[in-house]
Amino acid sequence: MLQGLLSALGIYKIYRRWLRTQIDLDQTPEHIGVILDGNRRWASQREMIPWQGHRRGAEKVKSFLEWCLERDINTVTLYAFSTENFNRSEEEVEELMKIYEENLREILTSDIIHENQVRIRAIGRINLLPERVKSLIEEIEGVTKDYERFYLNIALAYGGRAEIVDAAREIAAKVMSGELTAEDIDENLIEGHLYTSHLPKPDPDLIIRTSGEARLSNFLIWQSAYSELFMVDVYWPDFREIDLDRAIRSYQSRYRRFGK
Image (cartoon, rainbow, N blue to C red; front, side, top):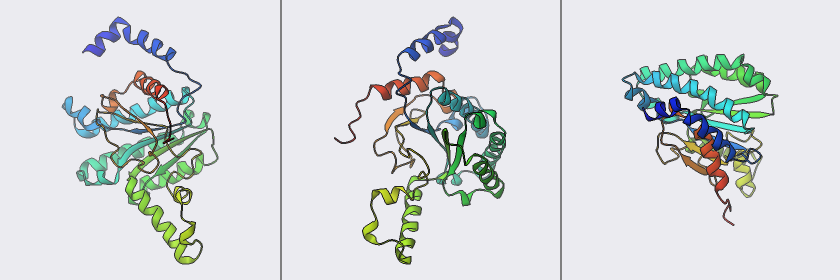
């Protein structure tokens, strides 16, 4: 009710304009990760079924990507579906897969994606997804593989620990085949076998989590070692442009020492 009243008074627009003056658009984060949390609770508050919240959340992703492009943020990684999410009801998982399928089809012909040359990758254990979703992912990755201006990563069937396990398995197989030795293993080698190895900057500068929760929930746990965290006390479908600018302003106000 309060947000609606402020909007009616025009205060929201005034605040948004003022907030834009508080951030340096030449110093925005290069890579932002987002934990898209609160879709189901958003739906529950409105006495809707859970996937209605997921659909509204998917619509918000489109707006969020446009805001990031306007701010010249090079890379965005979205935590959409974790390996643990497969434990939800079969009906909810199936509805989620339908939403992903619909939105992936839209991406194929999206002017925003192609005009801005956004390279898209799905990261995670993609083999666990339905064939129709895997097929669309393969098609989208192929169509955008030569784009290098912006990067959008969609974490599906993703888990940070699973990512490290998969990297360790690949490295172990190369050691066993003689391609590598144990002495070759260092941080750079491990990073080169993570799902994010294709990115110009794999480590996010800033991670945003919605819904007010204050944990990473197994998201980019290797890459986030020095990421700044920003927790927003709104559910993802209610995330606003000013919330992004507040996160950027907070990021720019922090002194990043990287352990020095």
